[in-house]
Length: 375
Image (cartoon, rainbow, N blue to C red; front, side, top):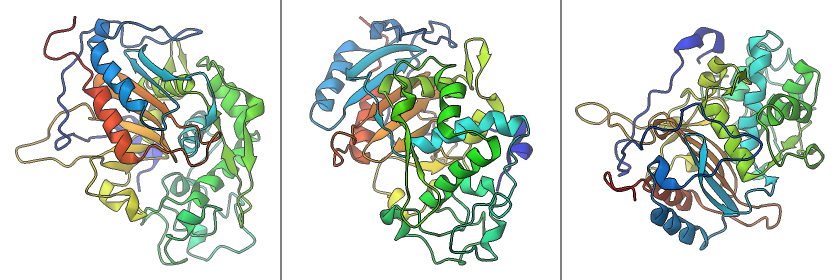
């Protein structure tokens, strides 16, 4: 298991794209790579940054056939595409986990939080006591979904697929299990002496100028069978894009280091390769995507092919993902951020499948101008 203090400045996700079929070409250089929005997003004609308006309109037509509620594409810090109501905030589902991970950064770096503390030391006990083997799980194990603790989390779909309690030592096995993530939320509030929503507003929403954040719309939901609630977060697509841009800038927003740069690299470093992700329905080989897991962020992973690695637009990519099809995808190789929202508040069954989002992602990437023709 990697540890934040030992990884230090050398953290980097060494992943490559080979078999996806994406054609990659670098768009024209301009504006400055550190460009960020002001009170509102700067919208530019796609061709000014090497993208094709007709191709993006084809993407728009595709989105109209599904449950996408809103989507925005940002290239080099400027918006080139928006669809739907990008200002409406709704539940982001498991994207909340990636946001919590970001909030942890300053408190780990300043010594308030020690990710090596065990669940027992953190007081995360349930009514059902920890097994002796489970007591050794640390906060870092929770954040990487490798705790080996398989207690009820309130998410029956995930709970039914967890291994038998006591069968896996902490750090040895990845299992995407909401108990880990909800307990990490409880630990954050215990260690920092504040609510997640207080930190979300002060440490993230305000510094990056979220346009639609409403503290009153955030709130916890009890987790049946567990003392650790779900910390529901609601954001708009355009504010999700700000989150992605902040991560792509190494936690820096203009002249302000909002999140420590080393922490951003730590979160997006591959910990669990694609083939070791569990439950196994999260790693279906017949699909196009190959997302491994980092620290509450999904990290793109592609094995090297004969003769070395293939370079492509998903090199170094990482993403926050939520049920129903809510995504923040960061593509450092293209200086691109994609925020995609499905409104599960309005209709709980609304969904854009992983395969459908793969197509959306491919169309966004392939919206670059063909050859050197950007008219």
